[in-house]
Image (cartoon, rainbow, N blue to C red; front, side):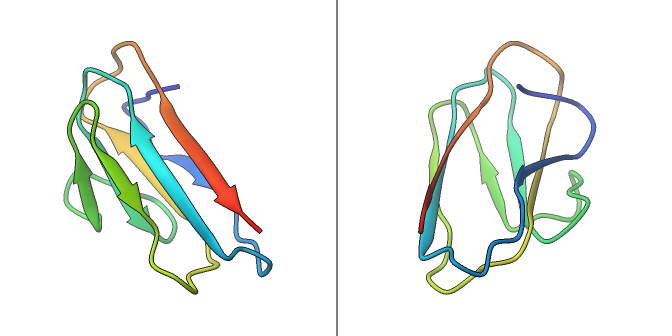
Length: 80
């Protein structure tokens, strides 16, 4: 669920081959390839209904934070 505090979207997984993240929240989702996402420390800024493909070969933790705690969530799929 969306949160105005940093949350883990995916834990580190050495078996990960890929992953996708879809933002179905009305708030902006900031995605970080690493720990502790913030609105100034992120790799991708996802508006409502935006989709992000995690770079091939990245197996580390993925965190996210929304611009506001609204209604919605990140829909995350991990391929192993």
